[in-house]
Image 1 (tube, one colour):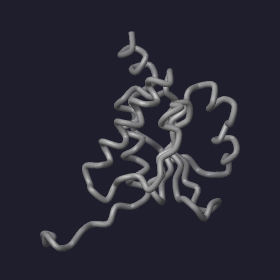
Image 2 (tube, rainbow, N blue to C red):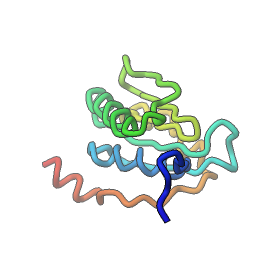
Image 3 (cartoon, rainbow, N blue to C red):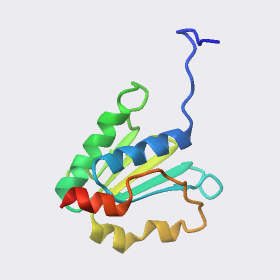
Image 4 (cartoon, rainbow, N blue to C red):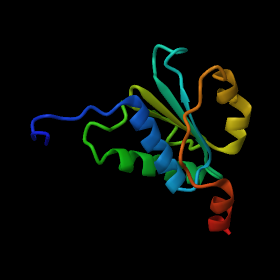
Length: 136
């Protein structure tokens, strides 16, 4: 059975989180993690974290996420913070909040530790060794 043009398939928060994680991975982000915070927070369903090696890479990651998600006109962030400083860029997609940080900021705030009760999504991303080989 095919879907009519007037019917739209609703994208779930989990699908959005997975897509953001893939976009991060495609741009060689470090330590991509997605947490399911539905049972712990009332303002979001998922957090997706990654580390950019430099402030320049955090901006490139931000741009890649924004452009990749813009393929669907409804997938523009509701709010964005930190674009100018490029140390911690937050993209709020409603049910999903993406955090792109430089290593020092991620180490300092340790958000995954703060939300350690949240289960992590199993992500199918490039293995760390393969990413290191690509960077060499």
